Structure formats: structure tokens, C-alpha cells
Length: 518
Image (cartoon, one colour):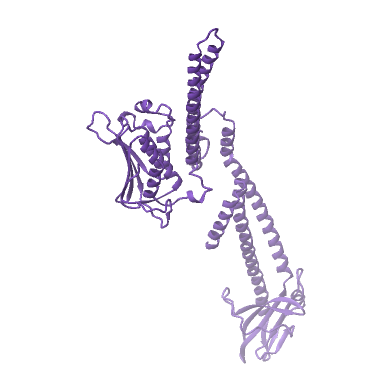
């Protein structure tokens, strides 16, 4: 059965490459082996029938040989065969073929019959099917194939005794006629049987596949807003895991659609709110212009507010657009067209140092002490661009919500098989009740609204998605839990240590163990 398993594997590989009709595959796999088995069965039935026919004809040939042997006697010291004329005529010809005979005496002389009838080959064994000393063999006589029975017959009288050889042969027309008839009958019945089995298999496959067609119709006829599960009872038990996977995929798709709708609604709200304020201020300015004897100072103040709002709205819109693009990029696993952003071994310390240098001026302007603490390169497997975005968002948030004269620390360290990234600030922190909600897009903690009213509320959402993409965990905690105010915030992200060999060259400059960046 090894060849059958090999054929199944090869067919399976071909089917994986080009999946066709399930009904066609079932019919091929059922009818193909069935055709092979019917062909083999036809051959075996034919061989067995021919063997049975040969046994019957050999028995008849042996009976003729025995009948002739009973007429062989010794007369006056000679072996004679008393074969009547009628018997000779029946031996010489038959309705279905021709029969030949020969009687050989004790000394090898031809007593009667056809003297040139082929002799018994030396390698022909005695037949074990009969108690008589008989041998059967095939030969050619007068240009025709014949089947010959050679019987050793003891003969004796008072003066002598010995063994006579009686040979009776017949042409094969009768055997061939019977063989052809057996072959025709066998092929006819086997063909009818194969046709009947093919029809039964076709109807069985059609019947078995009906539940799949019902499933197809049920899925196609469902309304777009129907999010209910497909009933697994529509199909067979073996197909129900597929239906369960379809239901699970549909549920995940609904969650994704709902999330996108909510995301779009939140984004439109964030963009619409400053535009509404700007529109209101423009209407007030227009009314002031239309009012007789209007106050020019009030008009100028309104216009200044409009200009200020336009500047803030533009900055907020740009910031929001950048954050939305970043979120979209994260959902697609980064910019995979850029070879520098593929998964590789990245030195997290170098990225943290680069971010610190980029934000150093902002820290100086707020008189904030920005520091980096890192003893080793602390490599992780990831995308350099996204890791840079993660650290930049954390550091930017820390600078925004840290008061003048405060401190922000970026720390990269190893902890066993993990690499820890920590960002600490001396701001007000985030209440414990809001630490899970701040990772949702557009959600802003109550303590952050006063210090940064123009924020988009996407920074920590981006951080969470990048950390999830890299298989890292994130946690928030108070930097000074015992303090009544300004508890500070500590953000810790835990990465798996890198397994690659090459380190992404984020910066060529060496990084000290601890450095003041601003």
C-alpha cells in the first residue's frame, strides 16, 4: 500500500495548489480505485474461469484416453488396440474441433493412430489431480496448437507384460470459444456492476454534499447587518469546526468594524470641536462688523482669538493626522517596504539616546532635567522605526505633563531574559482608576486636560499597540506612592531579549552608562 500513500500525498500537494470541485475530487477518489479494483477482479474471475474450464476439458480428455486404454490388449505377443471404426471417427473429429490419438507399444512401436503425434516432453510432471499415470501438455500438430493427455497403461498376459502409452490430443477451438464466452460474460457483468456503483456513488456524493449547499445558501442570503452565528447543525459533524471558525472570524470582523466606527466617530469629534469653536468666533466677529458703532477693540480681540484658534487648530489637526497615520502604520506591522523597519536585532539603548537628543531642546525650554540611564546595549527583536515611535511618545508625554523644574528619566536595563524600558517623570501621575482607560484611543485622563488641552489622546494608544506588536507587556505605577501630590508616573515596558545576531545601527555614537540629555 506504499504506492497508494505516495499517490495520495502527491495528489494532496496538487490539490493544495489548485483546489477544484469537492464533488469531483470525491468522485475521482471513489471511482478511480473502484475502477482499478473492478479491473483486477475481472482479471481474476477470468483466470479462475479459464482454470475451471481447463480442468473440465482435461477431465473429458482423460476420459477419452481411458476409454481408448481399455481397448489396448496383448494378442499373440503383440500390443494391439481394438478401436472400432465409429470410435476412430469420433476420435478424429469433433463438432468443436479435431481430436487425434496414438497408441505406443511396450517397445516404443506405434500400434495405432497418428504416428507423428508429438511425444511427451521430458520435463512434464505427472498430474496430481488424478490417480492415473497421466501427463497433460501443450504442443503444435499440423500447424495447430493442441492439448494432449498421455496415459501410461499396464498391459500383460501369460507370456509378457509391460507399459503402453496412450495419447489423445484435441485442438483448442472449443477451449478458446469457451474462454471468449467467459471473458465476454465477465466484462459485461463487471461493466454493468461498475456503472451501477458509479451511479450509486454519484447520488451518494450529491446527497452528502447537500448540507454544504444549504450552508452556502444560508451564508449568501444573510443580510449585511445580521451578525448572528451560522447554525452548525446545518452541516455534518466533521464540518462543524469550519462553521465555528467562520462564526469566530465573523465575530472578530464585527468587533473590528465596531472599533473602526468608534474610531472614526472619535476622530471626527476631535476634528470637529476646534472647527466649531473657530466658526463661532468668526460669526461673533461678523456680527461685530455688522453692528452700527461697533467696538473696534472688541473686534480686534475676536480676530486675535480667531488667529490663535486657527494656529491651535492647525497644530492639533497636524498632530492628530500624524498620530492617526502612525496608528494605521502599526496596524499593518510597520512600513514593510522599508528594509530598515523589518524585524531585526535592535539596540534599545541607542534608540532611547536618539529620542533624548531629539527632545533635549523641549526639556531645556521647560527647565526639565532629562536623563538617560543605560548600562548595556540591551538588544531586542523588533522594528527600529516603531520602537523609536514608542519611546518618543512616552518621553513626549512625560515632558508635557511634568511641571517646570521637574525631571524625566529614560532607563534601559536587563532583568534576566527580559529587557526593561522605563520612563519616569515627576508630574501629577495618573489615578489608578484610569490607568487601564488611558490606553484607549482619544481617552484623556482628567489630570491631563488642564496641562495639555490640545492633546489628541492617542499617545498611549500608540504605545500599547507597538508594545503588543513586539510581544511586550506594559504597566503604569506611581513613582512616589506616599506623596500627597506630584506622585509622578513610572511607565515600564518589558521586552523579550533579542535572539538575532545583527544589531540595527540606530546611531554611530557610543552611549555612556548615564547621561544628561537636557
